[in-house]
Length: 363
Ligand code: ADP
Image 1: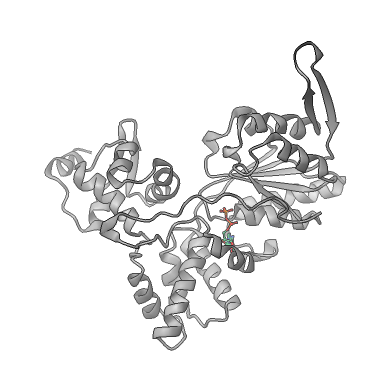
Image 2: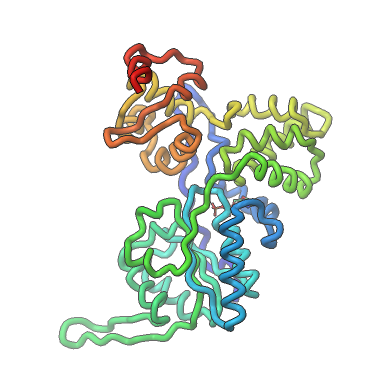
């Protein structure tokens, strides 16, 4: 069986900002650019020992894998959810490897026809691992083929219609489905319930990211000191994929404009040039905050109004921009919309509108 037999997942477009930020492509966007795929594969941990952080998840996974191996069974279906770039695909690959398999990688948007999914399912051997990225984007019809395959290891195919309709039940080997999603809330309840193991991946700490940066720098053969690695880690929005991307930008700068070593000063200057600030926020993050802080006087404001002002789509704002701003306490979500916090005003070096400041005093 082979890895990557289906076409690569459709990529969301990368975010390019408005004319005021001409040509300012986001560097801290956590989605993978096509040109990064090859390098991502090089830097991807090859064993659980190389996988940094997410300790509780990894520990529980290892127990489940060992137990399945001892019983000589396939692993239960696994669902990973959390923001992009945190290591969901990596974990799927590590699980497959630990079970002695190579994973079959595909994605929700790619599987748009039931026959594609049925073809894959019926070709799996016992114990094989099928990874579906962006599983929340599977079409409803395709999803229904998945239910009996996950639960009873069979696919039901209906031939003819009306009085002549006949259902053929085709057996499927006992495989493991690993699903990944940035939006657990968008999964239908019947699909969610069919996963025996469900894990949430959270943002990484600065220390963990520092370890990842050091390991990647070693693999890319670029000298880096602890302060240099810490500087990149602090600006990576808690996300390994961004840490690796920033490292590559800093490496370019170090090789061309410095002496080929990454120190704090080199990292600071390289990232300043990329428009990444001290908290790892880029132009779109700051534009998002400024829209609420300035135009909407601190909020509350609905996400679609912010999206319209920024000429961005709401999905990008909800999946990519907002979660980290919520995490670091710059934004809050209320029933009436998004609000910024005094921390955001401080970070943007903006004065709070008088009515906002008065409200904060009351709180
Ligand atoms: P996701 O599937 O959640 O979008 P990936 O698994 O593709 O994320 O991870 C993105 C990149 O980040 C990988 O290529 C890998 O190099 C790096 N990475 C992710 N998680 C870790 C980790 N825990 N330790 C080291 N590197 C990691």
